[in-house]
Length: 228
Image (cartoon, rainbow, N blue to C red; front, top):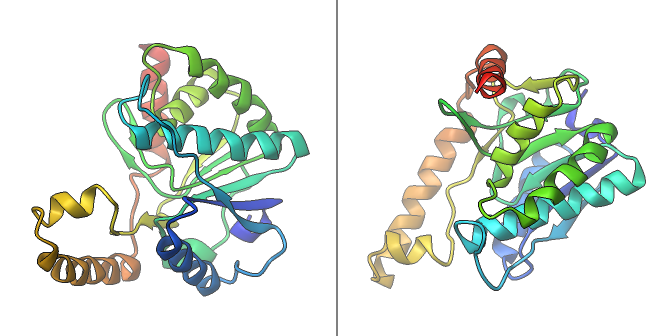
């Protein structure tokens, strides 16, 4: 399957981050996705507080993913879910397996995964995911959405999953309201230099053939969780 083969492609984006929206339009245009009728932005959720998640951003990200998946599940459609700091690699236009869960970009740790900026779900996976993610809403210590996806795969071993290697997307170095302030040390005069450095980092990441840890490592992580 190509990324264009999903019934719908949704990009999560805060309404006031037009800079990221414009960058994503450029990325989607570069791989031939922008302008297709099944591709659109989905307004990200901004929550009033963090609890029970660790941060406001983690809380809002979880709810934003859940809303996109709920819409796809209701329509009985597959969905490619992208976050607005997603940069595509050269592998993004290559043929990928037709699976229930396609993980396009990620970092594997010993007991968890980081990254849900490019994830594809079949219609049946989306329909199972919605009640699964909803159940975590009342938990006193819910996982971030990428962690919830891994737990979902642990509990649904019949679903097929593919961890792309080389990866299809990396996360773009970009400004945020919080990170920008910390990176500059509170000195606005440093922000132009910081942005130049981020642009250089982005240039390199986009042109590298980014290798993921691969399917075997991904499956091993899921198996460790099943045995825990």
